[in-house]
Length: 238
Image (cartoon, rainbow, N blue to C red; front, side, top):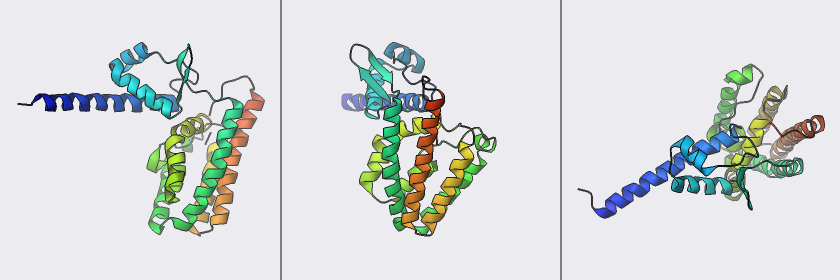
């Protein structure tokens, strides 16, 4: 028979598993836009939707606030983040600088095997049905994400924590929102290939320049979106 400590431990593990599961599900719904930017978060509604008690749900919500996917507004409660035009441009300025640095370091430090894996990642992207149809870019996270692989390949753990930890899901949210912009998927794919070629040639200076240009092109894509629809909610990039 299980003693009281084992039962308590089992109940705690179950609670942690529930919290992790609902955290991942709500995170994915926000990042993919299924829960729209600016939406008010209702704990009772989410508890019913995901079949979870308020305790594990609140833990998940707290973690999402830590990722800046949710923001808590006094006297209003939690809402899905909705960056202003200025805030979004600032985010891309940070990416342009830090990912450029990561790309330079990756060209110096990635192994041949890691570079081969990165090329296989692009092959996977090219086979994606949405990409082939010209309606979006492959948007899986982690090891299937071209940017994530390069940042990890930089070998700089502080940089990786900033870009693949604290900011990662917020950045993914806006990359996904703008990925369906006409002509952008093919353009981004071509830019990725040029970046990869510079890394493979161990040309850190060129790799950094190309990554900065790549993210700069995405930033200009966002600026054009706001110029065309200044009062609309931001949707979409890669």
